[in-house]
Length: 381
Image: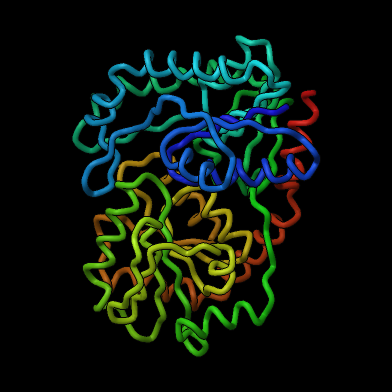
């Protein structure tokens, strides 16, 4: 039996862990799950029956920016929360033969305390905290943020769901020590890629009136506050966008029934078949989350990346994607209709961007993906 402990912040961790779970199910394994927050909700809706464990997280301001002050307040009792998580995980994994921890230090630690082999899915070994107003506080906290490294070092396998060097998007937040490299495997995107038919793609574009216009998909990952801040910004200037493009935006809120138009911006509460829409789009607008950025690369789509302010990890991912020539980063606080559309046009009109995206897409398709991740987990039996 295999236990999957999934980070519940955002949906990226849950979706990639679920993709690995599907492959392990296909191979005949019995699985159990644990999570919290959005990850718990996602796994529950997909019939995984996860155990609920105490949550951890970071503070976010009303504009979606990472707040050092709120992060400190939110984590005043972090050692107690981690201890509670570890105890909860230890009680859950008793019958497991192998543990898979997706960025859950408590689960990795619990596995080792229970003498279970553990594979850790990780793309952030080096935690980054940025602040414009509280730089001194951020500097003081930064060394404390690296404490999980001591736990990651205990992993029997480290699965990095990213492209291999030198194309690794999350290279700045990894910086793994040499002593760990023999336990590391780069799997590429942890997803089950599907090449949809020409008719399926045409149907999506036809529904939104994009048969003769560029189709731009806006989909935002991350915590609830981070997503909401950017969705509200686009709602404010949706009518000012050019009708030369077709824009479809998911408000990322399946609990509502949003389906309305604001000028050329078509807002929907949820897009169930996100892979189909990414493949049908000419360009994707997103945050800097690794899972979604890699999906864009997998399907050969350039991206306008708007990372949450002061989010060190997503900012680093966005900078690397721009450096590789497959994306353009736009700062949220400088976001305007004119500046945004200039970024869209600069990517869609650039032949070199299309060639680079195609090259990286081929690399992503040739990575082992969920099959290689499953192989790594099975090797621990």
